Picture (cartoon, helix red, strand yellow):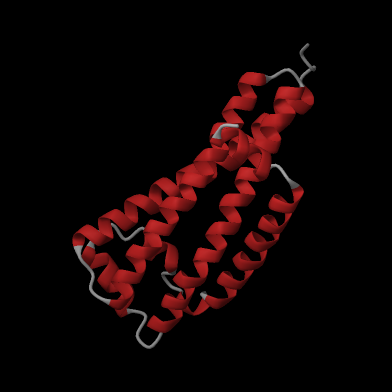
Length: 179
């Protein structure tokens, strides 16, 4: 059994996907509530600061709230696990459905989107390490740039995974089944 086959087998099990979806929804709600005091500009602006001066300006605006931002980033690791696994579960189920309906090429696209979601989670973890370095040590141009690039690619990969899953599922549902 190849790694891809084993991952596919595990990631399409309900015992894998449904708890992941629950974690993603629950942690998403918690993070929204817990991070509300960081607005404006919010944690996403910090993730996408791109320059040391922008990052410093954001952190200086959080006077007395740095502990909230640190907790937000630490708890985000749980959310990452939830959303990456949820998107993998959904994309692989979509891939299987498309293949069963005779749309194997669309199934491969959905499968790649699922792997992209896993990569988004990895990049999000790297991004969070950069955020924690900036919140607890010092803000440097290289840390801000790596953090912002990871965040940018993460957002693109996650949005693409969601879009591909929706499009492939919809296309497979409405188009006639192929032999």
